[in-house]
Amino acid sequence: MNALLLENQVCFAVHAASRALDGFYRRELAGLGLTYPQYLVMLVLWEREPVTVKELGVALRLDSGTLSPLLKRLEAAGLVQRERSASDERSVVVRLTGAGAELRQSASRVPEHVLGATGLRMSELADLQRTLGRMTQALTEAT
Amino acid sequence: MNALLLENQVCFAVHAASRALDGFYRRELAGLGLTYPQYLVMLVLWEREPVTVKELGVALRLDSGTLSPLLKRLEAAGLVQRERSASDERSVVVRLTGAGAELRQSASRVPEHVLGATGLRMSELADLQRTLGRMTQALTEAT
DNA sequence: TACAACTTGATTGTGCACAATTTAATTGCT
DNA sequence: AGCAATTAAATTGTGCACAATCAAGTTGTA
Image (cartoon, rainbow over all chains, first blue to last red; front, top):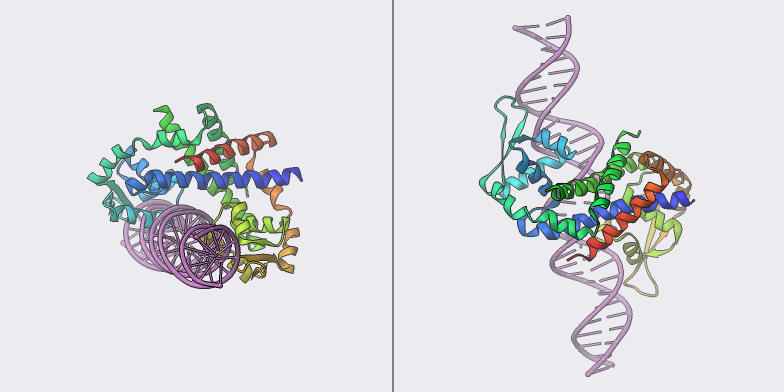
């Protein structure tokens, strides 16, 4: 009984936290014209580029049903460029445009803002990340 | 540097955990014909009923743009019934149908399955819940 | 009482997420 | 070499989430 209530509270807490985070990023990134998932894609690109859609999917654990339209929107916004790989015509390679690369500067303040807005200490954040990581792993492997 | 990387890791961890949880619930609830958000609504109804759309929104922190179509789907599935309140015609009251009430039995095993699948100890879950709750609160209040 | 302000819910539009299917290209096997 | 199996993306369909807007009902107040 206690356990069952707790289950619902924990699951709801994860769900609610995810939405609250999403909402904060929405306000934070509005000026850049990015959504949170788009920001995640840009983070990967700012780190290593070019990158295939497949690689983006592995890094962010998203499939092409999510990435294809998202990348189309980033392309329409002039931030990335897509082209089929010359060496393997099945793959699509994603590159930053000049504007996409420049956006990195404007985005550089975002992490500290978010970090501050969580109201958590560094040690708590590290703990949180570790626990959530284990849970995600376990849930993914569970039948 | 370290902090900024941690920000992205923590935020991604929350996001990924939420999706992993959602995926597990999807498999777990498929037999009942419910999605996770629909299950949350049913939990509220199984606990106290009837309930207005407004009250559901406060409990789950969802607005009518999300709840209206969701409740329509639950109604189409024959699990709930909606009608305008007699005392205040602005409100819509949601009730369980017989089938909706009976579904509670079939759903009673879900919490323990999920709890087991997280792979976390009770104390860790309690911790997790507390930390996420504080973070959600802080993010909601942040500008 | 009459009207303005507010409340409740529905609608519209945008975007994320995922399952299932489709198409095209590549690889492996005989 | 030729064909089956595999792989990469895109597409289609369903559902959640939220912002913005709208319609209808209620409340407060002049």
